[in-house]
Image (cartoon, rainbow, N blue to C red; front, side, top):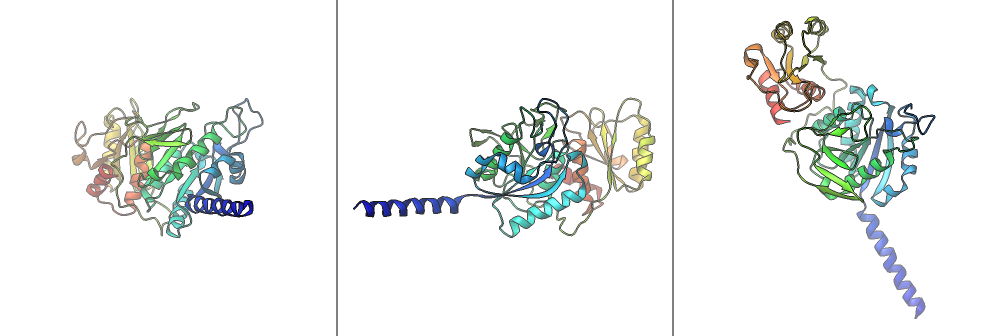
Length: 349
């Protein structure tokens, strides 16, 4: 009788394990380097080298992530995010689309340095063609620091990626127990742990004790994404920074370098002094798309309000900061040079 009971219990245990294994989310972590993979000589000093720790070592440091799914890792790059570039962006988005197309995983986590994490997140948000979860994560302190934040952030990112409610939300960023929409998040402090914020709208959700709670979803999540499958580069778009009594030479220098677009990070509501305005208008007449953004850090740049945009041939970034306006303008220029269509993209995406 005991033998029969043991056999039945064994069968039930195996069945339960098989069912659990079959329902576990398959999550691929694509590593690009950054502080989360950084290493320093001292646990109490700030100095470190980004991107030194390989993905396998990151996974081994957080064995608990395997409780949330079948986790595998791939090394896409090993750089600090100050060195992030368009080639790596294209490689990353093509790999993510390939993963989902071939049903290799149910979700993707991307480890990334914080300096340009928001730009990569928004680029992926505009180019990943699938509604499965894509979660970017990083750290403000290297893996060797006494109070490093990378392990907790990585675990939380996997928790978010595995959560069923993370579907159809576009690309998201999980940092410091908060979840942010890729379009709205930005880095706000050079060294503070709570550097990532959405100044206009706040986080879309929170992570605590291995659980995810969403509170709202951005309406800026168009079904149509930009197809970069056959692209190896993007059109050149440069950013010009506005300030009091600015010299227009910076605009002329950039104009002469042959860009397809210029994003102006203006004062206040995307404003400029007369010399800079004249130079930007001349650039627009040459067929360069000039987009007015703002250096303020929050709020919208309004169309045809203080500035006669239609007359000058400008478009406005709406509530995108300059670095994200550049991302959208580059991708828009892969499809059209029509100012009206590009302006509509800034209102839709």
